[in-house]
Length: 381
Ligand code: FAD
Ligand code: GLY
Image (cartoon, rainbow, N blue to C red; front, side, top):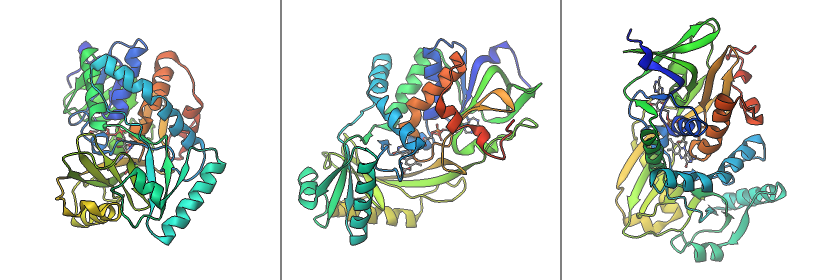
């Protein structure tokens, strides 16, 4: 095994998606200098690249709980995150604060959105009710069949591929070492601590290791008595249309899917939610389902050809919540994964609390709530 002092890092981050790259940036901003990101493929090309880029703490929530609060606090960081990244890298991540419409097209949908309006209003979430006429005034290309809708002024979007580009550029400019095509196979343990990790080609040693390995986390061989929480891949397919100019101002949901308009005239329609293992293929059934979602929201799209399709794997833990913080059995091993449908939204706050914990030994209530040690399979003390 090739292991030398060049392979030593203060912090070794395994996985170069939005979570791993955001943590690397925050650690650098807090003074860490020997940071390495090991990535099995190319950085920023998995779930984070496949995402639709919605920052939706309200439209996707089903109850007001710690997770909703975590989502809202991460959204609060986004203005500064986007501004600072622009200053640091010259990359505009296209933070769009036009808000999100959640539209009803059937009796059942109307009952559903009225139920949501009632509890979300009572819980103090930012939500407004729009009649059919108000919805069409705001979004003239929405179907004339729309019954009514909810408007979420604080559910935004970002161009997630530009965000990944900005984070990768930050790493390059600040000498954060990125090693691509380096799949970590196992953790190296020494006297109840992690000494580093092993790839096919080399060993890498570090004072601290962060697993930001998304849907693939459970494939890493653990070091003896360190049991990693089980993370499952959940496939999401998206189809995209291209129009010459932007037809929609806002993200538009129905209870069956969503439409995300990009500045360059692209319109993304998502997404399937499928248990298909690690298979990232597009399926005819998925495409057909998404086309139906698109036509229901806006029949004006009927004449357009599908311009692009793709799929990605969301990382899901057994209880559906993120997994964040130190592993009890090895205190210098940290996990930051299982952001499931909200990893783009949750990247700034995840990075902040992980970097504060690793670089400054600062605690956070979220590291307790989302601790990896809450699962029976994790080596809890
Ligand atoms: P990833 O981006 O998958 O990164 C993990 C990285 O780790 C990968 O690059 C992988 O190659 C690498 N890796 C894994 N194992 C190893 C190993 N052993 N060694 C080295 N490297 C390894 N979220 C939102 O907030 N808003 C949205 O609108 C949204 N839409 C979505 C739409 C779809 C279709 C999908 C699929 C997801 C969507 N998500 C959305 C969810 C979001 O994409 C994820 O929660 C987020 O990208 C997770 O980030 P990550 O860095 O953990 O994972
Ligand atoms: N948050 C959108 C999705 O996961 O499809």
